[in-house]
Image (cartoon, rainbow, N blue to C red):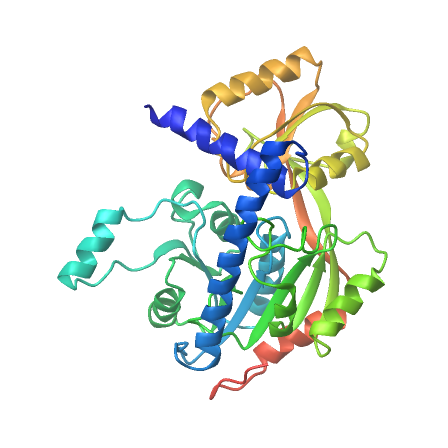
Length: 403
């Protein structure tokens, strides 16, 4: 049994599971599989509730590090647009004089082999330090070693420390001791209870807030919706500018005191592969896409939103390919994509910035290849965003103040 065969089977199972969760399958086998997933979902819910109860009753303890901690996360898996929010928040803190470190678990990054972790445990040897993605001056790891999001953050945030380790307590202590950081931002840290935040920023995808309402693996929820109550601020992402009063009422029901900040992901420009940043023609205005025949491809949680951006910018999508989230592209994939683009008469190929970190820069491209750069735009609640930043920047050192 080859690894590639096994990987294909696992990918096929993952895609089938997604179809069942989203209700795209209506046959008998999907119903049986859905019932099996529901049973697992009940078990998962029991584990989640038990874990929160143990921390809430101080049977399990969080470990304060003596500095300010900001948690950015969500109740669901994937697709809320978290990385641009982390980037915006970290940049705002840095601009106000904070020494910021972003702590990430590095989803799907390369970590120490399992046998090494057992060896450290058996011999009581101290585990290696966190992986340093950026020391504030240089990006030291690639996306495969660091993970897609940490690498993107490190590349876009000069001056900000970016560390990867599943043990965020260890990573936070290292950031304080090694780099003198006074502010820690936990990327995707809402479910990481060993390190408690002064502020909990919870992101909710306005286009699909809580999926089908079920917990994993029957749905996309990591925790029940009622756990909105743990948020200090709720960011409604992917907004179209129109208020959703029903969603806001649900948030207020579970967390009457939470401020709601509404934001949208705005396309900024196209970046061309093969041309170093800053060289003529490397950064292309969005008007370039008007009436262009475009082949789009992506390996992200919500490809629909990316493809909608392209259509809204005037592109004619003549071909599209969707891959699993965090998919690692091969040479065969690129050959297939460019063959498809040529057959459909595409003028260029466009992907996402998150996908771009998994694509080699040093190869030749038979057609122009771009990635779309997005940034967060606060469209409602800007004063609340500034207040959240100010609460951190002007907080005095001392005992933690939990929201």
